[in-house]
Length: 128
Image (cartoon, rainbow, N blue to C red):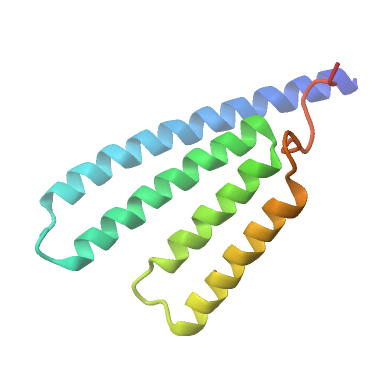
């Protein structure tokens, strides 16, 4: 039963990852058409571009996390989430300070938990 549950879980994660990739592609196409129509003389348009690109990168990192189960992928996903939060227009000084602390914590976690070749939390199949 354990093998069947693992197989089901693995395929469910793959299906979810495929759905997320399809959503990223659809969002990318919609964002491209929206950004083309925006006023590029306005600084807010550039921030909107960065915001949308970071959202797509977060989706890609989420897919990577679902497929690899690595601590490195999780830490990178969190780093992009913090970066996206930092680029919001309504961010105050406290939020920027907390984002900087979050980056320091992520760098510390990466240094402490990830030695060479130790990024895998668990595997779908037992290692040989």
